[in-house]
Structure formats: C-alpha cells, structure tokens
Length: 356
Image 1 (cartoon, rainbow, N blue to C red):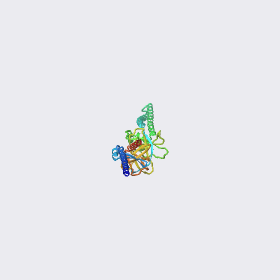
Image 2: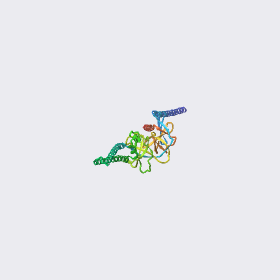
Image 3: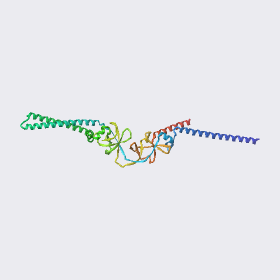
Image 4: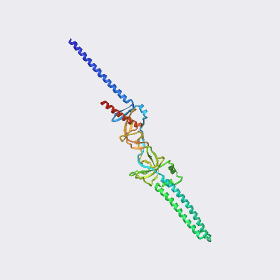
C-alpha cells in the first residue's frame, strides 16, 4: 500500500514539472514573437533604422526608400587644384563715369566750336591787316577791332580746351587712365558692354599683410557659391572705404546689381596640389560642424566630419579625412540627417515605454 502511494506521488511531481516547463517555453516564444513583431512595425513605415557602429551613427535605408527619396551617390576622385586666398570687393557704380562721359562730350563740342570761331576771327584779322598795310584800304579802327576779336576768341578757345582737359583729368583721377580712356572714346567696345549691362565693373581689394600681385584672372562669387571668371582691367586710384588694402578694377560677364558685395578667389603662385572634390550639395551642418554622409554598403550610411580646406566652383577640396573611392551622398544628405534623428527620437521613446 505504501509502495502504491509512493508511485502516485512520484507521478504527480513529474506531471507538475512537465507543466511548468511547457508554460515557461510558451512564455518565451510569445515574448520573442511580440518583440520581433514590434521591431518590424517600427521599421516598416520608413524602411529605415539606426545603429551605432564604432561610436558613429549609422542610418539604414532600404533601396526602395533611397530611390523614392532621390538619394544620389558619387565616388570621390582626386583632382588637381591651386591654393587660393580670399579677397573682397563690390560692383562699381558707373553713373559718375557716365556723367563724366556726357560732360566731356559737351566740353569737347564747346572747345571745337570755340576753336573754329577763333580760327575765323584770326583769318578776319589777317585779312584786315593786309588791307591796312596796302595803302590803308581799311581803317585803323577796323584793324584794331579785328585784332581784339581774334584775341578774345583765342582766349575762349583756350578756356574751352582747358575745361575739357580738366574733365578728362578728373575722370582719370577717379577711375584710372585705362577705364577713363575707354569711357571717353565714343566707339570703345568695353564701355558699351558696361552700358548694356553685358559686363559689370568690379573693384577688388587685396588684403593687407600679404605680398600679393593682382592676378590677370580671378574667380568671384556673390549670393551663391557658384563662381564667375573676372579679368583684370587696371589698378584703381580709389580705395574701398570699408576694406583696407590695394584696390584693382576687374570686369566680369555677369549682371550683378551695383554695390553688390563680392567674394574674390585669388590663385596663389605656388604649384598645384591634389585633393578630393566635394560638391556643396553633399554638405550638411549640425552642431556648428560640416558633415558629409558616407555610404558604408548598399543600404547603410554614416556621417563624417569634414573641414573645408580649399574652395572650388560649387564645392571644395579636402586632403584629409577621406580617400579616393569613398562613396558620398551628393543629393539627399539633409534627408538622411533628418532620418537619423527621427530614428534616435523614436528609439528613445520606445526605451521609455519599456521602462514603464
């Protein structure tokens, strides 16, 4: 009888152990499936997630989402470039020179008229002098009057010519010989281009403290980073009231408004260097730092800090922090930055829910 009870007790204990083991296994399976289901739902709307590899934020974006968002990738390749220094200037107001042009034209016309009158008066006096010498065929009074008229007309001609000369000198003092001469010649093609706004005149001030000569050609920009070529015209007799330094006149094929502030890029006279060109559109700003997104593999991207080392047209060159063959995001970088922080915020909110 005791043996029978012992067998029943052993069977009951065994049954309890089996039931407990089955219950624990079911709970684990349920929790695992719930966790997987939660992760899939979180990732599904944007087909993206964020991980942390080597302490760098990594954004994962599915290929379909990349295409839909217009993400574009470019591979960095080496390029030669020349070191530059930056100068500043502005678009010159040509109205004073146009006024000089009008005043000089009027003064020249007046001088020509006065010269013609003086020549006629001189001829009249010479005719009367000959007649008076030939048996006094004209009176002395007539001769004297002709002499006085000729002298007065000569003086007027000299005064008119002096006025024209002074106006030309004033224009030269303000704008330099090259520019003033171009403005005051009727058929000067360069000044015609200025008048039609096909070209603009620039005054660029070279910075003090650097032993620079004015390059024959430079690149300029305003409003955007897109550059335009500018050609040296002459030194400027004026100085910029805001910028200390030596000033030079350049002209460029652009239609920038008068007084627009200009950034000028002056090539330095050293040998060319080699660097990797990064387009401006690849750059995003966060925390006061410039960043570029690198493609790690087909669907993963990470930010990399970048320091601008030399400006280029619509971009800049770098010589450290990147290597040839690196694939960078040249369109859609701002979207990746937004996606990165969206995922971080969502991850933080989920962590708070788990704590609860």
